[in-house]
Amino acid sequence: MSNIDLHNHVIPPTIVDALVRNPERFGMNIEVKGGKRYFKSHGRMTELLPEFYDVNAKIEWMDRRGIDISAISVGPPIYFYWLSPDAGLEAARLANDGIARMVEKHPDRLRGMAHLPMQDTDAAIVELERVVKEHRFKAVEIGTSIEGTALADQKFRKVLRTIEQLGCFVFAHPYQCLAQGGMDDYYLRNFIGFPLDTTMMVAHLMYSGALDDLKRLRILCAHGGGYVPYQIGRFIHGFNVRPEPKMKTRTSPRDLLRRFYFDALTHDPLAARHLINRVGADRVVIGTDHPFDMGPEDPIGAIDAIPELTASEREYVCELTAKDLLGED
Image 1 (tube, rainbow, N blue to C red):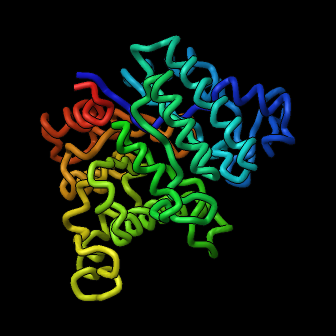
Image 2 (image 1 turned 90 degrees about the vertical axis):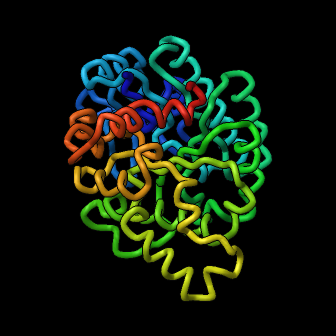
C-alpha cells in the first residue's frame, strides 16, 4: 500500500527566481538575513526552506516521513490573486511550469496541481486548459475565497464548471478569511481564520445552489474541513427550520456533504476519528501541509494514532481515496 499526500506545498524555482529578479511586479521579495532566505507569509517572514523549491530535498523529506507520493501545490503566500490580471497570469504560468518541471524529475513520486489567476476568470480558464493539455494535471488548487469574494460567487462558476468538465478536482486551501476582526493576535488568522474560511466556503457552495449546477465537481478541503464535520448537523437543522437556506436550493446539506473530500490534518486523533465517522474513509486523505510549521511532525504516525482505525479505513485514507481523486485506480 502507498501513502499518498494530497496537501503538500512548494514554491517552484521559477517563482523564486521571479521574486528575486522583479519583486516590484509580483509585490513580494526574498529577504536574506543571517545567511538564510525568507519570504512574507501571512504577515510574517517565513524561511524559504529547501523543501519549498528543491525537488530532491522534497523527496528526501518524503522518504524520511514514509510518504510515497505527494501532489504538490503552491503555498498560499504566492497565490498572487491581488496582482493585476497580467501579472497574475504570468505568476500562474511560472508556478505551473515550475511545478511541472519538479514533477518531471520524479514522476513516480510527485503529482502536480494547477494554480490559476482567479482575478481574471477568462485567463484562469485559458491557463487551466493549457496545463491540463501540456502537463496533464488532475487537480487545481484554489483559495477558499478570492480577495474577499466567496468561491460560490457566480463570477467563478465558469471556472469551476471548466474544472468539472476537464475531470479535475479542486483542492480548496484558505489564505485569508472572509470574516474579519479579532484575529490579529496569537496567529489566529491561521488557527481560526483558515478553518473558518473553509467552513464558510462549504456553506456558501451548499446554500447557493452551486453544487446543484456542478453535480460532478469534487472538492478536497484542507485542514480536516475546518468546522464542517463538527457543525454539519447545525447546517442541516438550519436548512430544515429556516427559509433563508432554501432561497437558492432545495438540496439539504445532508445530501451534499459527501460531495466534499477532506484531508485528515486535524492535529487530534479523536477529531480525525469523528471526521471518518461522519463522512466515510472514502472521503478522507493524507494531508501534511509540508513544509509549513502547521504540518504534523509524523504524518503517518498521526494516521495510525486514530482510534479504532480499521485496515480498510487506513487503506482508503492512505491510498484509495487519493487514487480515486487523481484518476489512478
